[in-house]
Length: 203
Image 1 (cartoon, rainbow, N blue to C red):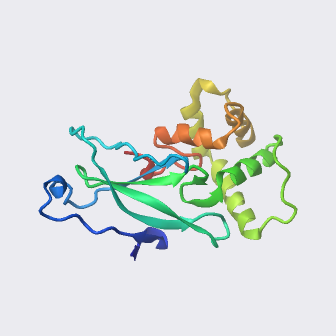
Image 2 (cartoon, rainbow, N blue to C red):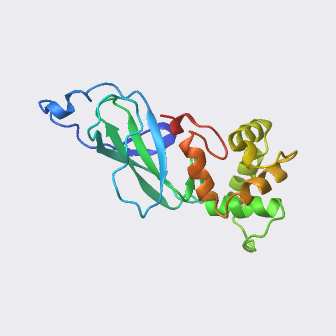
């Protein structure tokens, strides 16, 4: 086990036998990592999203890493990683209840943004943890930047009306679906997310 970027605990699996022909093409430097979203109920092997001419199954389990599951940092989960033997790149599978690079849950972000935009939502906790409050406040500040407003408006195009404020944009996005998890899946298919177009989401 070793620590990756940001102090995340990485768990590596042994490298396959060097005499194994099926792995010889994968003995190259890792050229990048990509993050996919999926439901915890889906236990199937992910499909490779990298560009290569070979059509055979190319993904193999390649360790995991631990990341926080919640703003408190008291709970961690194991995120699986898979290696493409033809490109040397890895894919990790992020549970769909989480945001990239954010410890808060998607449901917490959705409820907080709804309250800020005066939309019906679940009742707010009477004593919300100070750490969680800070995480949600930073998430909202990120969402309301002109960069995110322009990126999300461009992504949705004619599917939502033009908006002149972060509140109006959030209301328009929410009208497209009751679930923020579904909207995040749509964004991820285009290499984007709600709070950033992160490099790890692009093939």
